[in-house]
Length: 160
Image 1 (spheres, rainbow, N blue to C red):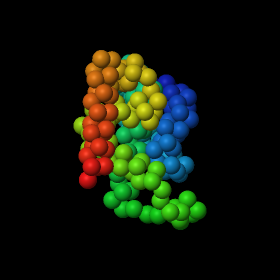
Image 2 (image 1 turned 135 degrees about the vertical axis):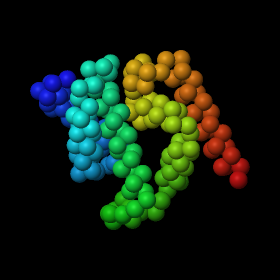
Image 3 (image 1 turned 180 degrees about the vertical axis):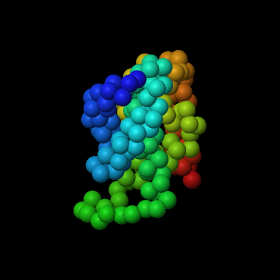
Image 4 (image 1 turned 45 degrees about the vertical axis):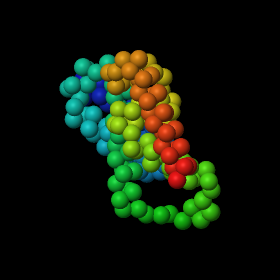
């Protein structure tokens, strides 16, 4: 991919990449940083981008992973911005969601990726298959295993 082709790609996909990053990091400023870093990473490897089936899908996966890395880093060094939402009492929904995220984080990496692409990104199985280079049957199988594992861990927690 030439420099000009990359510029066109970056301009065309920037909005979608920002939306993806915002879904994870929940901050416009941090999302902007994530997208900038992702585009820089893709620019560095621009000579190899033509070998990918979908550069757009690759860019989304890169943004997703970089967003998750930012979230992991911020959990090690938490900062809290006080506003009406953070001051309210936690609800059982908040606790259940936190438990769900913790359980998902314990799944094997492939199951985590497929589960997040399907249910958080809203991608179709065929798109996930093309991005991950895994067959559709394997995608369905991993989704099923991940869901069963989550259900089992929730049942175990409720029995405690």
